[in-house]
Image (tube, rainbow, N blue to C red; front, side, top):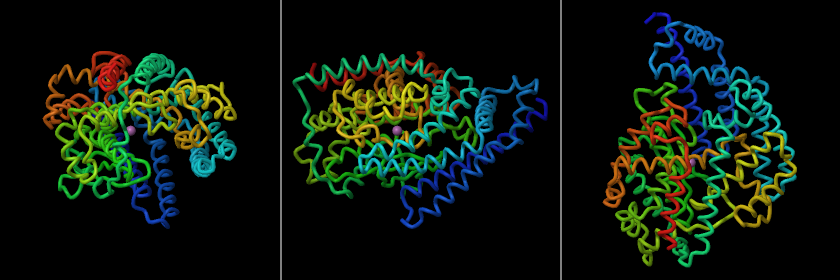
Length: 512
Ligand code: CO
């Protein structure tokens, strides 16, 4: 092995290591802002984040990194380096090429416009005033479209929108997404029609009993322990649970934190958000220790991340097997509430399917229809086929057509999510892709560990935990998502296993 190549590679990784550590510090400051910060600290926290992100950007476009990348990739011996080393170089190069091609002026303009747009979005949403939101959203989309056009050239994607998709789901295209979403939509609509006309509808009133927050905290603790996610005071804790308006997960390896929101009269909400976020956290904590501080030591994609959270939240978390041993504990912790609830009624209630207006409250079946609507809209926005003026009308029409619900105002319509105000274009599809991956992954899990559900009913999650760790977490970011799903399941991305899972589950629950 030529010495130069080895030295250059080490130098490159060391530079990148600093970037990763800096990124993890930024994440902690953001976390603090959402969870712990006293009210007056807002300005200081914003200054800290702005400075950190400025330093981050400067470090990522450093010419020294460019020189090292060039020396390494042009070295004739480079091809003989192992897969992990080549993947590390590839990931660093991809990020470097993209960051250096985006003018700093444009990056700063997007950051500023985004902060402004999020603020206006909050006000506009509170007052149901799309006209207030529209001009700022228009400016933000124009800036992001400019960035997308630059990224399109760097990444050589077919459209600007594809360049955005690639940020969250590397190498995924709108063409592939459209194709699988079409099949998904057809299948879901058929299933939904059967569910809606089934005589055996669940009773969800049982979920709206008052349970004090301190009891809900104990329930959350039990769930996290069951999944193997440790929080203080455990000396082995590499995570913690705090409370925010909207649940999220953030962190790196041995410090991955989750949040939830407790609703007094809806205890199921925090139960499923804790299971969801714990699924995300276990993935991050389970990445190979040998790859810590390297680009390969990260998750595969946002879609894969969501496959892990949805697997724990829905496939496992809403199953009768999972609750067989846990339900008596839930009953005990919630007492005297829930005294009139039994396991069967609980499982039926938490699996109710009902078209609704709000995505984050949607059930497993209709959730993906919400995502498909957003995907269709943002794709058209970025391909210049849709004007920001027409957004509410298009949105409302699609909701009526696809979900059969009538949107009364834009706050429960086009302004319900923060994503578009936060420059997250190309992100929504990963939610539904994650669900499809979870279907494929579960099918494979059942082939490799046929008794996992039986074990689950005995309160034993080990077969699932071990399999996910060995097969998914251990791959880190060694492959793009299309390659990883092929490697893990033996087939390319397909919607069939997910639809089959839904069909089996809901025909059982609704009796058709
Ligand atoms: Co998630």
